[in-house]
Image 1 (cartoon, rainbow, N blue to C red):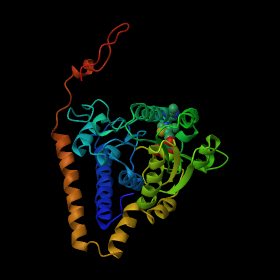
Image 2: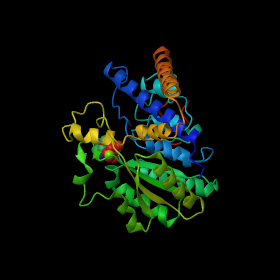
Image 3: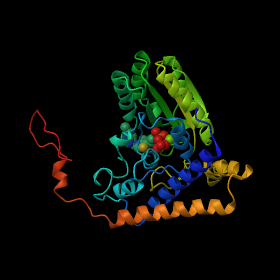
Image 4: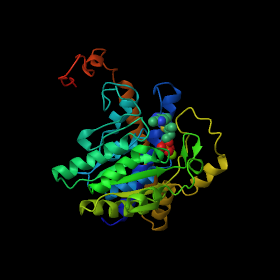
Length: 332
Ligand SMILES: Cc1ncc(C[n+]2csc(CCOP(=O)(O)OP(=O)(O)O)c2C)c(N)n1
Ligand SMILES: [Mg+2]
């Protein structure tokens, strides 16, 4: 794996700060009703993305996840201004404003959504790995899902096929403790989600996902295994979400104290502590980074606000209107 240097730590700090502030801004825009529908935020889970990006080869690896999907494409190189525009339903958005919060997508950057049906993306991620294997690209499919989704039948079908065909896929359960308001402790007779891989003899591990170093190491080993043709790995990323499930969540299912406990091991704070301990940046240099992050969030907001809504006729360009096959391709 690439060495984890001072530069990596500084990049992790800046990236994770940006992802968190970007989402804080989305929350504010939601309250102003500028973001409509659902809004599921990633605050607290950022180390999973930072660590994964360190281990990935962005020229060929792919990623797919559920609806908590705003910052992953940004990490993979999508213009954050276009992601924010998508959330505001603007024509400059990643899907011309037609997808919205749950459906960020960029084939160009290897990011395949953005899925609202819990667990639906698990077999799709296995299919993406099949495509990489079939085409001999050496790419790996990183297939993410939550602890709630892990209890869907689709996981078992995908695990079975992926093991049978030794597909280059890393299945990643982001165990943030809750599926909406249901604690992971209440969804099954045990909460060691990683054990679900054992029935398929899939290499399966739990990872401290509040620490990007641990994530990067586990991800790298799994991706190397996939690239050697040895098939899938299952990683249970132990994480936590600070915000509610979506924006309208009174959070009666947990205590404020619990949230505070997790904030003590916050991934951004952990990274900043290492930077400080090693004197890798002065307080003034940290301030410069924080300011740069703030400015970029403001620029995204301005870009999204100033962009036009899509033309009405676009609506008719993205639906099939034939009564039977062959369907013609849509116009976008
Ligand atoms: C098939 C299906 N069932 C139920 C829902 C409603 N629903 C949306 S999110 C969610 C909880 C999923 O929790 P988890 O997989 O842990 O992901 P997290 O939100 O914690 O990231 C549920 C039940 C849905 N979208 N799709
Ligand atoms: Mg969850």
